Image (tube, rainbow, N blue to C red; front, side, top):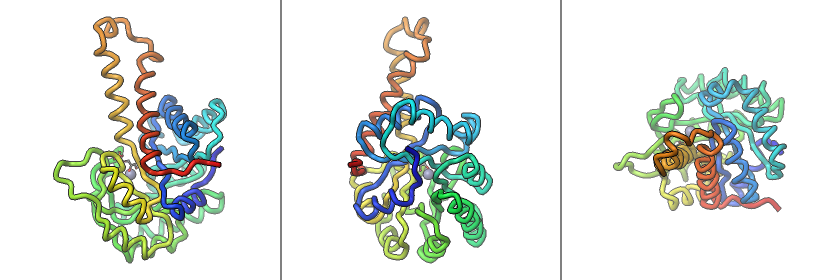
Length: 286
Ligand code: G3H
Ligand code: ZN
């Protein structure tokens, strides 16, 4: 069933585990993410970026796709349908379309503006029982057209954002979207600890792909309750699609049945998601 994120993430923070947030792109990705959650009997966050929602035909379509897939697959674990890195307009559109959680990403605004707009989204969302994620500092690299400088989260700003009533907070702590460069310095655990001590809401770790699992688990032990992973599923999927065609010459000419072409990639997405759920220690549903 579709639920909002507030209680689930508060429970995760208390229990020192995290819930994975995985990005969907279409029917296959949606099925793979939901299957992984059902198979591990754990809650899951399925999220769409603005770009993915545009690609699929809009927020309403994505919301219906997820809801109908939950029904047809008889998914019984809690599912949070979340907007990833939304601007102000996108957050409002996702709320109207029936998402049960939204991220308002105001990292590119000046801080006062980020704060004001976050407040507006919180009011709109909470009226409808929808949870809200905000962002302080920024995530380096690019996520579907959203570009960040990788600026470390400021503790004072984090406090002010948390005071708007948001349900969880994404913080820049040296994390980067996409593939990490070889000279990456790792996560800033000191800053994470300061943030954890300063703000009561669960923290969100973006750019989950490629962070060594020990660092992810340490971040979870320090108050991270939601970890976003996107690029790793894309890599796993693309590898399998390539393998499918390269397996034999015949396939290049006759292997055009989309259901066969996409099956191994879909399975790879499910496996990757399940692996991450295990790493995050997501607690199974009773
Ligand atoms: O918002 C989405 C994530 O932060 C995903 O980052 O693609 O580096 O795993 P990633
Ligand atoms: Zn992100």
